[in-house]
Image (cartoon, rainbow, N blue to C red; front, side, top):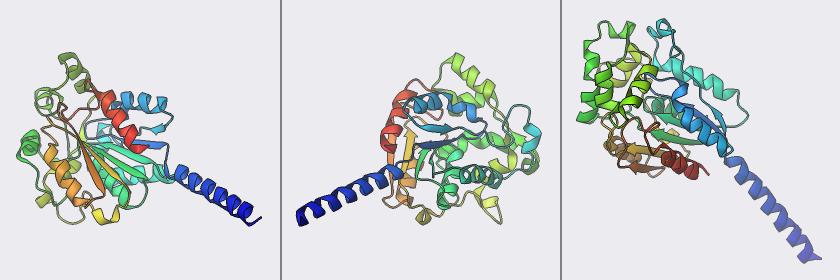
Length: 272
């Protein structure tokens, strides 16, 4: 009799443990795009993740929709954080956040607020307090030519975009991607790039110790805008809570480069 009771208790505990593990594995994913992009940049990943049984959300940040350029004037990255915070708070469970480039800063901010179950940062830029590598500085030096940056918007020329971000794509794909690129808030560019000249509240300041969830950092070995060095620095910042996956032949726009499926699969495997 005692053995039967013990067996029943053991089975119940096993069911509870399995249920808890299942609850911890969120199938809800929010993709956060980077600067000069819209939610459409995630189309290949969206289809792939849907085929793997995930619930997918690909929001477009405020002011980034076509013909909404004027909405960007004076917007801070804090506005983007508020927008996605409100979106996530309406969900039934904490999603996995998968972010590209500038979106990685937003994702880390949301993770600080315990609004994510896991964090995937693809080609992340430097956060506040990190010295950007010389390659990164070169890819954004054109921003110096924008007058009244804080109240204005900015978008790289086609040649600059190709040189810094799109060079790993075919000529046809470069034109397609650039044709879909939109302006970015000048204040957001300032918050990201001129770290030492931004006074007061800093929306790209990350408190790493407050992020308790697993973090995956994905870097491209040929990325000029967000070199592998940034990923390596971030891994150290997370003090054992993060891991780095490097795709040696990829550059900054790895979301649409030839091996994007390989990258998507590695992320799915890591999430599961």
